Structures are given as structure tokens and as C-alpha cells.
Length: 618
Image 1 (tube, rainbow, N blue to C red):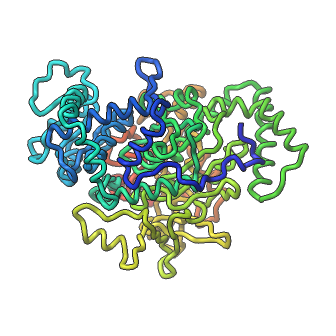
Image 2: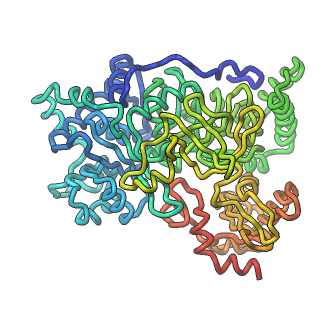
Image 3: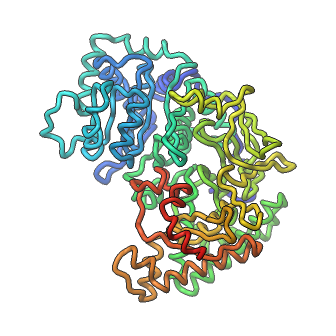
């Protein structure tokens, strides 16, 4: 159990854990060192199945052998179209072991996007999860002359399929066993031939401003960065982690798969994206990395549960979180926590806070990590008051993940911390843009030399597109994206993300886009939290027949107005939101308004809902 006033247990590790200058070499070194120990776990038919390093190696060896038997050559690209699961990791490591380039495709992408990404990456082998993903691949394979084979992880519903260019993962492994028996040295020869400067993975940007761009990362950058991570958010073989974010996103690929490969921390895979709250309680990770949307959802769940609890339980929570908040205030101010307050905190944990932590599933967590989007400082402080430090990291696809991070011993909510030890970060004095330089910075965009030259200048500085400031302690604070800063008709510069983060702190708001550039006042488009708003409606006898009617109900409109009023009270008059519009369509990752990481696309939302925005200014 972590104690809020004793943060020595989160000190970063400076020693090199595992040798290897390519991800492939690092993996096979890990197998040699950790063979019989458990590395991964995944739930199958309600039972957790463990994978040792040796079992993982056997599967990777067979898949790699199967790829080589199909003529997969070093430098060729294989893409993976699947939800996050162990098979994803096996395919990825097999491709890299063959000297190939591994590319991930979001499982929510439509067939047209699968075509674009496969064509742009020159994919020759496409791994797909199941019949749903196979349908997309079959729809576009006629337009992909380089695509030779499609490999399916889960053949349920496809047992009668007869297609010469489609085979199951089990059949590929069988091919691999035969190949490896005939060519016993072939795989290790491929592994040894792999060079640090070779491109290892492609990570496509989410495409909020046009077509996705394929960021090229070399083995050297990946292994360098993963070692750097252990000086920032250290882990060990004793840690239990959860793997549930998309593996085609840099956050889970680096912070989940490769960081776990390096440190030996156990990777636990959730059953599916909908079971995350249930699975996290079962796994009880010791280190938990997630995006703000997940942390907001957990907080909302606690607040809703609290409303349904007894008066005595509510009083116990109020007193307990008050004690936690007093300690959090002292810790954030860098002041010592007195003996009496420590004693009160032990009582507070026994009365309420331990139950809250167990309800979320963070009762064993040494610390939490948040990134990929801004988070409300109040939310960071709330988790701190529970007794679990939350460390914010910042980075992007092009920096190979985290480039800055808040140290546990000096947390500053609202800050993304100082530059990580493994790269440089500075502010462009002319524009205020955050610039990053280091071996972790990507090689460039595939097939787009002009875009690469625009992004990385002659001195090697990556232009991130984020605007920020650095305080006297070297801590960075992001003020906004360069393209998102609002200048109102009155000439006032406004940072929309600050308002949006405050709104998302509400249990009834999932996402928000603040509007107002060159306009007389601010308005906002809001995506409600369906589950919590539906519960509010049921508890207050608000009639609704579907999602659209729920958003139009007067009581729901008043509920959201109250949340906006709460936020407005924290800002100057010129920064206050005057009107709002609730999206009346239940959006999923398949909808064009959302990125695969479930963030509203500001530009597209403003274009698509232009009539509604115009109506708010009449």
C-alpha cells in the first residue's frame, strides 16, 4: 500500500535492465533471462490464462517461421488490424524478429481507411482479428496488389472459409513449425541481421488534420526510449500492469508492450474495451496508465455511487476525502505531513478511502500515469487525496511517447513536468511552440519528405504544434495547440482546453469543444456521458425514448447548464461560455467526428455542426 507522504517507493530506476539494441534482440534476451516466468495473462472463457516467456517465444518463433515460409522479406511491412490482445503482441514480435516493419491499424477503422493505410505502408501480410475485420480486408484486397496473405487470429464463424490467400493464425504457426524444422538457424540469423537504424514500426497519426501520416520509428529510437522510460516511471518484474489501450497507438505500444518487455512487468489484457472497469478490479494493477477519459469515468462512477449511498456513508466519505485533501495540499506545497494527520489518514482509509480505491481497482497501485490528452488539475488532486499519486506525462507519436513527465516527489497539477532525461525540450521564443530534440524523435513521415522537413528543422528540433510555457523549476505547462487558440472578436486570447478540461471533470460530460474564434463570445458543443445522464433521467422521472430525446429533455439541458455555470464561476467574464449545444447523436469510434482514441475532432466538428454553431450566435 502506498502512503501519500512517503514517495520513495516510486523513485526511478537508473540501471540498464536488459541488453539489446533492437526490439527483436531485446525480446529474445528477455526470453533467455526470464524463460519460465509469467509475462502475459489474458481471460479466455472466464478463466485467466498465463503465458510464460518461453510459451510466448514458442508462438513468436512459429509465427515468424510461417511468415518466412510465405516469403516475407526483411524490410517488408505487415499490418495488424485487431483489438488489443496477446495475439497482437505475438504478431508484432514475430514481424520484428523477421526484420520486418510492423504497422497497427485501429480496429474501428472503416474498409476505406484499411485500404489507405495498407497501401501507404506497402503491406504484404495483413493480420486481422476475426470475421468482422476480415470483411474489411476482403472488401479492399483487390485494390492492394502487394498484399499476399491475410492471417486471421480468431476463426470462429469462418470454419467453412475456402480462400487461398486467407489462413488462420493456427495454420500459419503450423507452417512455421515445418519451416523452422527445415531451417533451424533462419530466425536467429534474421534477428542478428536486424540493425538499430532499421525502421521497426509505423504509427499513423490519428488524422485530426487530414489523412493519417505514418511516423517511422527505428529500433534504436524504441530501445533508447524504453530505457529512458525506466528513469521516468519505473517498473520491475514485481509489477502488474494492464494492457487495454489500442496497441496501434504509441502510448500502449511503448508504455505497455515494449516497456513491459524491457522491465519484465506482467501484462494483463482486458477482455474487451467495455470490460475495463470490471477487469481493473480483478487485476488490481500496481502501475496503471490510462488516458484522462478513463480517469474521468472512474471519478464519475464514484460520484454517482456516492449519491446512492446512505447519509452515514456520505458523511464518512466527506470527512475522509477532507483529510486526504489536506494531506494532498501539504504534499503539493512540499511541506511535511504531521503525525496526527497521518493517523487521521489511516482512519480515513479504513472508513472510506480504501473502499473507493477498491471500487476503482487502484487499491494496490503504487502510482497512476495519465497522458495523451490534458487532464483537469482537480482530478489529479482527487486521486492524490485517495492516497495514489497521479503522474502526468506528455508526448506524441513523433516523440515515441512521453517526452516530459511529472516526478512523484514533486507533483504539480496542471503541469506536464520537466523534460525527460533522455531528450531536450525548449520553447520557441518567437511562437511559444514546444520543441523537442533527442534520439527518441521519429525518423520522419513515410512517403512524405516535405511534411518531415516541416516538422523537424535543420537543427533536429521537432516542432510539436503545442504551445506552452516553462516555469522557474523547469516544469512545462501546455496552453494549447497552436491551431486551437481562440482570439475572440474583442481581441481576447483564450485557451479552449482549460475550459474543456473543467467541463470534462463533470460526471455528465464526456467531451467538449469550445467555439469562439473571431466571434463575440464563447459557446460549446458537448457530448454527454450517456450512462450517467440516463441514470440522472431515470432517477428524476425524466421521460425519454432514445439518445436524441434524452439530449433534448429540458431537465437534461438544465443539468448541463448547471455544469457550465460551475465552470464559468472559475473564469473571467470574457472567458465564460454563453450558450451550448448537445450532440444528439450517440457517437462511436466508427464516426468521423471522433478519433480512434475517442477525442472529438475540433475542425471536423466545427464544420459538420456549422448550422448549430451559427444558431448559437443569432
